[in-house]
Amino acid sequence: MRWDTVEAIMKTGFWPDTFSTDWNVNSRTTGVIDFPNCMSKLLSFGMTVPQAIARATTNAARTFAVFRERGTLNVGAVADVALLELRDGDFEFLDNYNNKRTGNQRLFPSGTILNGKQVQRS
Image (cartoon, rainbow, N blue to C red; front, side):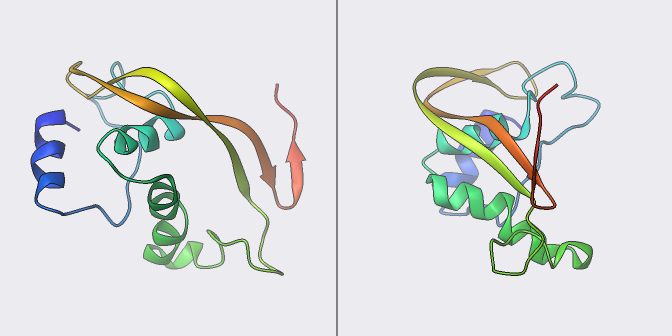
């Protein structure tokens, strides 16, 4: 991910349907911290929290047949849930080339539910 590329694309009104951590050989030592951090990067471009969550969950689950039963909170569905905390402040984000961008919101992981059971932090 490069800020100038993302900004040019977003200005055209094109928003991604899904996204990932962009973990690759170039990103392993730069801006990839965790998935909520990657989601927060899109918030800094004007994406709303519900839009970012949909792209990380329901939209992504619809893309891959193996995950069709995931990405939903429907009754009877497998309860795999990432609990996130939204914090306001001044946050610095890096792209894969160590370019900096600031945002005023960031998602932080706060818990995990796996198959309906809370996973204890180690």
